[in-house]
Structures are given as structure tokens and as C-alpha cells.
Image (cartoon, rainbow, N blue to C red):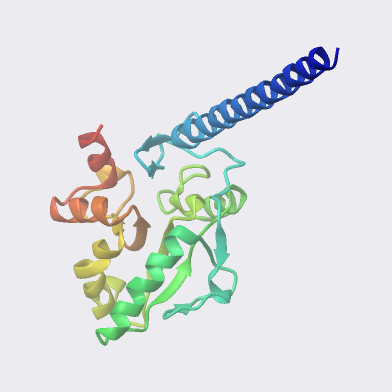
Length: 228
């Protein structure tokens, strides 16, 4: 009788161990499925926006939704920075701010300073206001502006001419790609970008892509088309 009781107890314990193993396996499978679903959703983004690798393309044909807000927004005024700010309420996504800070610190080490960041992240609603107040062709429609990504900023410097005439601009032309930035709307490329020349507008795409874009004189649209 005692031997039979012990056998039953052993069987019961084995049953508990098997049940726990199944629970762990099911939990792991569920976590894997959730993780895969998240990254698929992140990769493809909103329905009207194209991703190529980790580069987000935003223009008149590929727009962001009204409720799109980038992750990791930081207030530049509250961060360490080696540049000046036009106002205290300028925000960027951290993945853009950190290389931008390194870039302007490197410029300062080269004896080039005085950069003034004038604009960063804009909400869909704020872009709608700017568009409504601007002359035709001077601002993108809401949803079509890169500023909503948090990955683009406008910069200037104190000058009597345009920004393109400054040593700050010359330094960016020579070095911005090293830190992952491109001049998003270069001269004589409006047919590709849909936007006239903006020497003050810079977009973070990562050092590898930025170097190719600069060396081959491409726009972001041309780069994505070439690598599709």
C-alpha cells in the first residue's frame, strides 16, 4: 500500500513538472509572436509611409498620419548642447539629437561655432498652422513635412547674406555626412524632392546612407529608389 502511494505521488510530481514546462514554452512562443508583430509594425509604419531599412521617407507622396508622434522626443534646451537655440521649446527625437550634438561639438573643436537651431519637431497641427500662414510653395502640407518625424532640424548663423554663404554651412557640407546628416533639399533637385533649395534643412539618416547620398550627389528619394 505504501509503495503504491509513493508511485502515485511521484506521478503527480512528474505531471506538475511537465505542466510547468508547457507553460514556459507557451509563454516563450507568445513573447516571440508579440515581438515579431511589434517589429513588423515598426518596419512598415503607417500605411501611407515607406520605410527602406530604418530610413523613413516623408514627402508629398508619402505622408505621416495626423496622430504620428516620434518616440524619444527631447527638449533641446534641457540637454547639453554646443549650439544656440532660437527658442526654448525646440524638440528632436533623441536618435537625431545625440549625433547632432556630436556634430556641432566637432565643428566647435574645428573653430567653427555660432550655429543656431531654429526649428525641430512639429506636430501635424502645428504644420497645418504654418502651411495656412505661408505663401504657396513655401511650406509643406501637414503630414508631408519631415519636421513631424523629429529627425530633421533647421539651422542658421548670424550673417548678412544667406546661410549658404557662411563658414558654418561650408563645414556642414564637408562633414555633416560623417554624423549621419544630409542636406535634405539640395539645389537643382526640386524635381526629385518636390521642394526648392533649402540649405538650412538637415535630416538624420545614419552615417552609411548619408555618405553614399553625399558622394553620389543623390536626394533621399533617389537613394531609396536606387536601393529598393
